Length: 125
Image 1 (cartoon, helix red, strand yellow):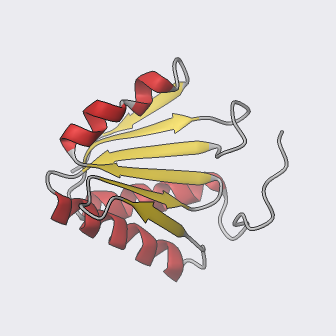
Image 2 (cartoon, rainbow, N blue to C red; image 1 turned 45 degrees about the vertical axis):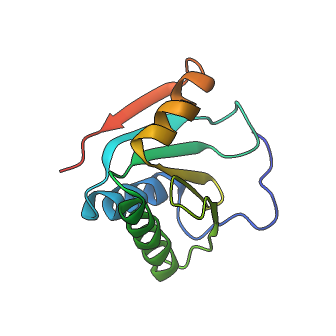
């Protein structure tokens, strides 16, 4: 296993962190949620969570909810993204979240980019 970068979070185990992200995203009605298992494939993260919001306003709302919920759990985050809300990246250490509008998600197509990694799809409720 690749050793983590020094700032990475050890507050929550990876699977609990993914569950936290999924819960926050689903609370904001995120769609087409996918979790990509990247453990051992990259030093960037062990998991990518990819979600879609119907509009830039919704993507920002989803991202804000994830950052807030992570902060409440003691997890530090770094956020980057388009000012227009088309793609927002949230780095939670071992878990990196990508919040896209439908057009941006289709354009970047991260699921195809990462090839045949283990993928678990979660349905937003």
